[in-house]
Image 1: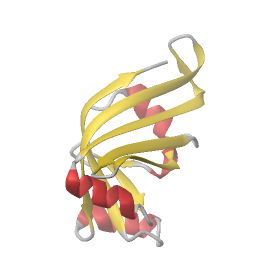
Image 2: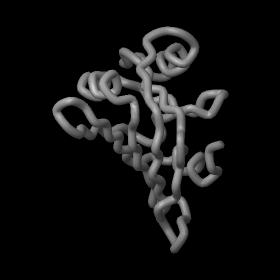
Image 3: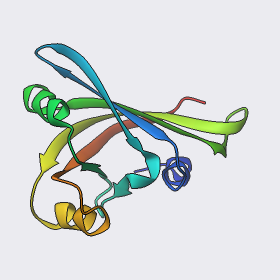
Length: 123
């Protein structure tokens, strides 16, 4: 289940950082919070334009860490809230999850789908 505070953050512009681990070590890529959509079954759907190294890393190790935040959402101690998400990722190039994002972002080549293992509010 996705916390309501996280859903609120996803409605705001802010940077989401996606960390993966591959044979060559860790890699970090960014996207915008408000580009991320939630599937009917509670996965995060992230448009992937390039993300080639991220995809290679996910093929090697499908575990990801994602941080995201918004200064416009009230957090634990005042303005600003953030989350650390731990999950399992896959890249999708066809089907409903891909089509949903392709309709919104014509530049994508894939959808990065993340099943959430945990979502911890960090501030």
